[in-house]
Length: 332
Image (cartoon, rainbow, N blue to C red):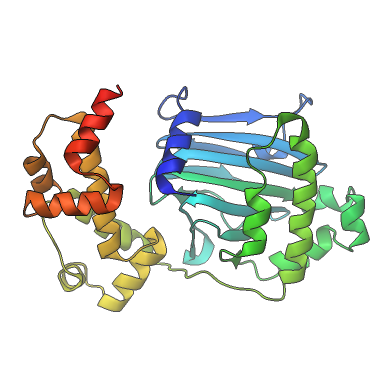
């Protein structure tokens, strides 16, 4: 999904939700709480919405829509609840037990039990996130297995053995099969949503059961996470200056290869590419929210000349800064 399209969609979905609010909406005729709500208390530093769909006894589907940078996820260490987390757009990361961190980009999938991420801070390094989580209570699921999965020999114990035995996340980078399954969850007519979700969730579990022996790992970092975020804060607060990898390496006492690899793990892109995009994003805010001249904005976001800034801006947006400002002001 294109970044601009996703942010526009999230802005529309969250339009009526105030800052600091994470709205939970349960889509079910049953009045009782879901185990998702029972086990989790979430706080967010921006705003967001979670749509929850109970599918089978012990299986719930949740759509996440967030404009935020981090979320406090306070829940008990429920080792019997399995999470299947899919990143549709944006970026998501967990600081888990034993100093391990896991980050997902668009199309990536992570599977872990709720004891791995109990009382964790979930970060959204790009400031937005859209994705799906499927929660499976392995104990309840074991005694209420859908016929299709029962026929395939899938139950709570097999899922526990396949995905929980190492007590570490099972991760699948972007692949055609999982992306096709998850992308089909969106933009469905209302009458067929629940039946379709049930069908696709079972298809996903069938596919994952075949992949369990092909365990793959996304790059993970441990003690470096906080340092990388500190470097990110420094860079974004000094947009009017340019820093080399060597400058940052000396200042923060981290070798250059670790700095490059760990920054890409957390933020999804090399430092130079990320900061180029960040500068343009900040310039867009200044174009729309201030009356500053194009030359002044260019200087504020770190370009030595208006002409260089205009070329970079057009490369990113396909139009010049003046056109962008005029187009958006005229539509207000």
